[in-house]
Length: 289
Image 1 (cartoon, rainbow, N blue to C red):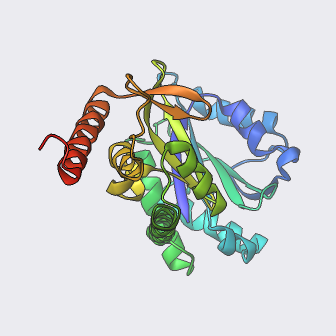
Image 2 (cartoon, one colour):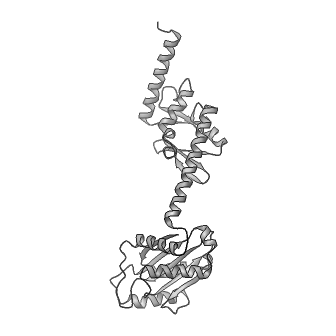
């Protein structure tokens, strides 16, 4: 479960969003309140907030998000328990609060709004509120046997690692079996294996690199593997092409039907490679001897 928290000033709008019927909202927790509409709740908050006019961000807004799988198994009572445990850990039992569950998406989540001003007129300290919310949500998840944020992050890390490995294997296959001679061919061959290669071209019409989209993940080439950075990829393609990949007399390459410049460093590096290849070929054939 992931917890987020912050101090806000737009109490009425936020509670109105929380109570939105478009989100299939249901009230799952309420404390020290009698109101039945967002406007009535906001009015009750305001009565207490009038005791401390110096505090501008006088409402605390929290979002508690169990994982999709955990959310499917959480009953109304369990969602209420989850919220109450969180409120207790954040030491907010004595403050006005209302919480809603939103079920309009596959990912069930809770919106919790708490009056930052207590009945004594003092403002709840909100320093590091985001971090404290994360830790409290993690503790609640442990207590209730739910997936913690650390486990969620580990799952994401493992998933990205799996995707990176698969993209790299597909890259190796495309380069090894198909031996593309330019960027267009490379993009076409990767597409055959369900990997979308997306060029990144800056405002100066220079090719900066590529992103790789596969199974819902979108990664930079260098994030997949260093051999898939723009520099290394250009060098690999140039090795497959006797004439090199640079358009004659330019620092540009053919990409999606138009000429696109490479950065000066990579273009110079490729030009040197072509010169070396030409000299080597000349020596091998006896030219100049």
